[in-house]
Length: 297
Ligand code: MEV
Image (cartoon, rainbow, N blue to C red; front, top):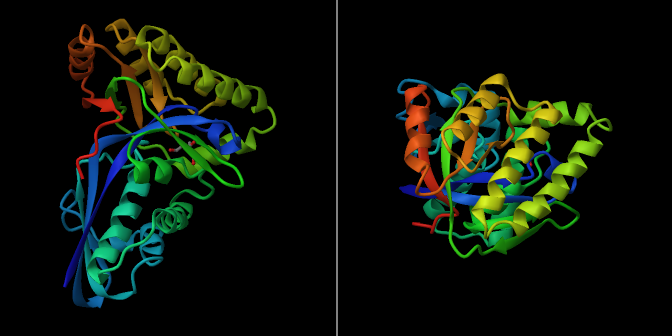
C-alpha cells in the first residue's frame, strides 16, 4: 500500500515580510517540485531522502512534529524527493507539507477540498515557521501568479500578465531561517512600520508594472533596498544583486525571508545568458525560469 503526492515551489516577486502586517505581496509558482511517497510498513515512522542518504529525518524534531500532524507514529515510511531547493525561500516547507497531505490522501483513497487542504498545510507551516502569513500555501495550491493579502479572510487574487516574467534564480549558498527573520522584523516593530508601509506601496506599483519589464526592473531593485532597511539582507545577497545588475539584469532582489536563500534577477533575451554566466563564474548555482510557469502536474 503506497500513496504519492507532488507540489510545486514558489517565488515572491514583491512584498515579503510586509505581507505579515497586512500589506499585499505578489508571488508565483515555479516548475520545481517536491514529491512524497508514503509506504505502509511495520515499525515507527521513518522519513528519508536520497539527497542525504543515511540521514534519519525523523530525528529532526520540527520535521517530525509537522509530519505527525498528518501521519500516525507507527506503520509508515516516507520518502522525499524533488528538485526544489530546500531552505532557500522557494516555499520548500509548504511544498513538502502539500505533497505530504496529497500523498496521505492518495494512500487512503480520499480527497480534500482546496480550502481544507490550505488549512491543513497552514497547520504544518505553523510548526515550521511560527506565524507565517499563508502566502506560500496560497501560491503553491493555486499554481499561478497571485496578489496575496493576509487578513481575517486571506485573499489570493489571480494575476494574469500577458506573458510570463523571465527570472534567473540564484542560490546564495546558505539557508535563511524564516521563523527567526519574521521574529527579527517583529522585534524591530514599530520602528520598521515606515519601511513596511513603503514596501506595501511599492508592491502596488510593481503590480501595475507587471506588463512592462523595463519599468518593473528598477522597482524590484527598490524592493531589495527596502528589505536591506528591514535588516533581512546579508552582504552576500547584496553582492549578488549588484553583480547581476552589472551583468545586465533589469532588476534584482532577495526573494523570501532573506538571511540567505535566493536572489532573483529579472532578465530578457538579451541579458539572460550574461547573468547566468556571471553567476556561474562566481561559483553560484542558478537557473532561469518563467514566473509563473504553466503547471505540469
Ligand atoms: C516567506 O516565504 C515570506 C515571509 O513574508 C513570511 C510570511 O509571509 O509568512 C518572510
